[in-house]
Image (cartoon, rainbow, N blue to C red; front, side, top):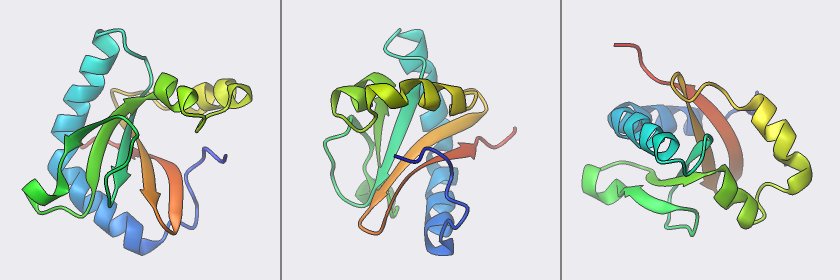
Length: 124
């Protein structure tokens, strides 16, 4: 699996992801901090999906906030347990993972697009 941002990130995805991310970024930053402080993982991953998926726990229901994307809180170890990240890809993923205090690791999951995307948190 390719863990880099897609240089051909379709504008359709970029626009809707960004629009929703701005609404939920504070919640995601807090959840990221709690995942790391709670010793669940040092690699939080937030799944953006249009439908319910079995990848972590539902953090933001899109219907409740009139968003396009549901957000599920997860982390590296769960992705490995579910076979999304294979053991031979672990070191590669960790080496490419960005500072979780500055960037949010999103796993965008849609019919035509499945990709890890790192989005910077807005500066205060």
